[in-house]
Length: 542
Image (cartoon, rainbow, N blue to C red; front, top):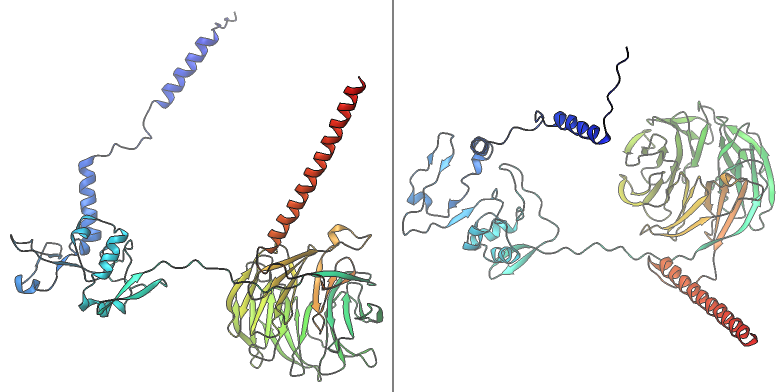
């Protein structure tokens, strides 16, 4: 026989649930044991004795302590015990450097300092002025802990803050901390904006590299269509096409010392072209994988190439011999640059490091590990002894010869493929998403951002910039892009030097907004008056 389930009201069920919940959580097994005040006091007293015993009795008599007290007694822990003041005798105490206050060794405890644990500003100033003359000379030449700072016994003195100045007080020099001025951003140099004025098409694949010849008559590009094309710089017309590579051409450069053009590609080949015959006259064999970049030494006949095989190779241009193999990187070497001064070779790699190389020894001089992501671009300033490197995390500026860090240029949040700079201090960074930022080299101020439209018929995702270069006059900027075009930019001659500050773009935007508001208000009032006229005419006719 099935037993019927007794039905209860909702009220009863709710209260039963509350009772079960109360029974479950009423136990205090997980609660901490109540603190016993007596045991806590003893514990803290033992801890103070063990850890801070050496500094429990820091106040010592100023001068005649040895005469008044023949020998200081010691307690069972080996710490010195100092006698209490005798009736009618006022012992002047000094505080050594380990005491958190006053802020200097040898400063007498006044009534002010005995009462206050941390100093007020007036007390600190009075202490600085009241520094004894006997201690002033020594204290002026040694760093001292500040008022809220605790220095452990035996720890070395910290350096004096940059804001500390020496004040003359009577015949003694006193060290006092003065408020430091807030750092101010240096005023950036004004540069005219750059505008697009020509788009050159002709390649059938991504344009991966670009170089301008020393005479500034023509420039050369290499593409994923395996061809090298030479273009007239003034008109933008195609002059010549060179075929010979069997894969993407990744680097081209024109020699300033001979009529040669050098190229490299993903087919592991490095070629030397004679521009008088438009033929390949030399091959440089040795790389085990795709060759990503190359550069010529400015003063000697040396060619440097970098490859996906994690090495850079130095070649003798004439004999085709491999002089050195620069090994040390742990991933593909993406870029290489040469200069006449030491270090003569700089490489950037996908292992996130930059290496400065000794050309003679073929070894690394310095390894820079500041970047967190792949370094795909390095550029040397034409006048200053500095260089910049580009990575998705930051653009960083460095100082030769040891690679001292100068500053970060933040804001170009993309994969930076190329960097170039002119002698006027305009640094250009081109990225994989088609954006191009222009910076003031000295201050790192981003004064212009450009995102040119892709060629008609291309996808928006094909707006990538792979290489860029200034011409020899530095009045034209050429970019090699993923939409198979070469874009040419020039300075905007109509731009005027309106505001020479970092907030110029913001002010101009505010001005445009004000004009927009005025126009909107005018249109609203005009429509409102028309509506009133219609209503009045309707009422009159009715």
